Image (cartoon, rainbow over all chains, first blue to last red; front, side, top):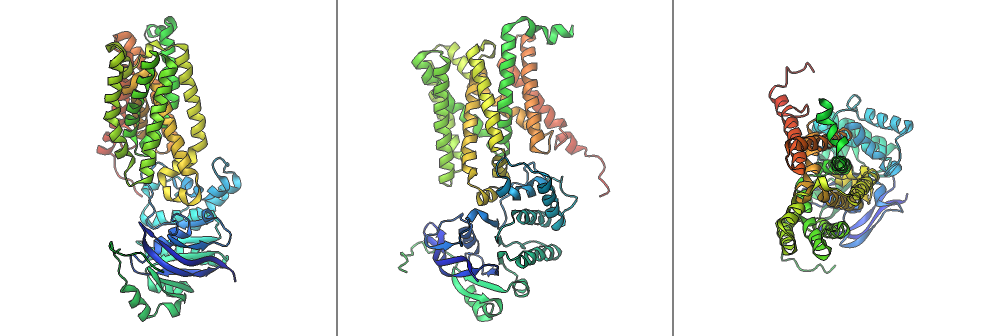
Length: 244
Length: 289
């Protein structure tokens, strides 16, 4: 087993205030890891660090040689301008960015892949629909289709099943399992403990600092969850410099 | 009869032909830019940028009179400086682009008008503010044509990142570094087109040929490619019809062009098939599924 992602004394945050504090550990290649923690625990911050949108305040992340831009990333509440005049097919096709780049044409093979991805998330028939007409669940399905096309070694999903009905979550979870089966490394921030227990072998319980990290059964104990909940959310404006 | 009304003016008069070519080339470049400005919610920015061009062109005018190259260079420099500063401020701080540009808006206009008045007459001032599309010389026409060509080629280069930066900026940032470059290039294109529009329509109306066809197209098209084509069509038609209108009625030609574009806009607003008011009020019976 090699570490796909290695965190060394990683501190990430905003305006020098840490949102993820002194995180050490590794995500093994091919692992399926849930990141669990209360709101404000630093889950999204950690993911932004992993995909290179946020520079560490201290410490480092090594990605086993892959470029952060080759990590597929589904942000929480993606800031998508839904009024923009673009249809589902074109939006999903953007998943081919790494191969098509600025000008690469979309040939017959790519066209087949796009249709296959749209079919895999159950949106066949929606190709020509404007994205503004999609429901929340359909939107999330479309974003998963784009993730499928990105064909990335590492996939990071920030609260992918929030405000999504059971049927859609189940369908999308099946895709996550498929990625796991293909040996991809998947991290997902989740709130539903039952979903984590039944689908994710590994869990990182985060509350700004690492509470526990390891096999899901060992991590999600009542004591650990209580500890995570007691974490203080607010930044302390008067906080001194961290000595560690 | 029809020939006399619609074609003869252009056959008979050289200045009408030049005006038509000029406004046509202007539409080809400015209208697609306008569509992107609108979709990026930067419509007002075009206005602010157009005003920013004025003091630069005025400095060029003070140095060497009504000289095309001095005024163009001045306008480009001033426009670029403001565009880059505003863009960088918006990217580096929490101030949004419209806010950082709004502050340049009136300062630039006041400064520009002051500078022109220092040296020129009221006629010069009118020329600066509203242009003179019937007096386009060869150099100006060439300049407009070059800027339209550059615009279309550059837009083709950054088409994907520009679109993606509007729809889903976070995704673009997660897969590519091209977002910032595309954005800055786009700002540069806005400036180039405003400067070339400035020569024909003046600083106050140059934005008109950029924005009005674009917002018109919003009511007729559902996807961006069609929208750009409709906008160019609306721009070309406004140019032609505006010139014909001004020829027969004696109205000032620049404002006539923009007024026709305005009529097209109101028509689209009322009758457009994508969200037009009439369509909203009488949508027809709902469908089965």
